[in-house]
Length: 240
Image (cartoon, rainbow, N blue to C red; front, top):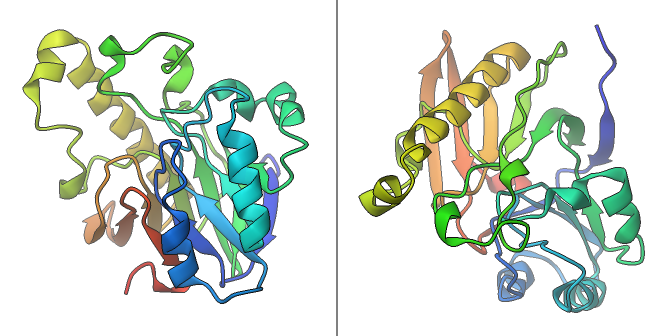
């Protein structure tokens, strides 16, 4: 069995943040969820809109410094995968309040181990510009895992949660004939991953929905938490 690739250990006072899509409006929700003058960690579940070294990054760094926050960022479909490589992480080194969670690494929160897996498919990829605001490498990386984890933090979601249907707009499917199949395949990949790591808790974003769901899958009860755009929640309140 290969050793776990450990990212970091955070306490159970950690905040979770949904997709923010390059906006700073989330900070008002952060302020209402945290005490002043206290260092806090924030796990952002992807779609930061980390496209390039734009003005958004220094603005975000400034806000995080002011609020005494460190943001740990999962890869979303609306993020440039380059910044999740060693070279990309090096490019971000001066933004010390922004930390990158690489795919298939372990994050421990309050003593609970989570496997972190980013990525997802953009339903609107046909109207985006490759390598400007869309990357063909955006998909969830299909990789076998030997180790067991208590939870999974992913940008997308498994197939067995009702509220995470990819889109009700059939125009996307008409414009992109392969889309529906690829979306189903992506969630099947996560289903297999959930079985392999034998987790019981899943936390994600992507679907712009505030959802808490409980399902039986593979013989056991699963908890799923989807965070909405700009939604902020304390780790210990995710399922309350």
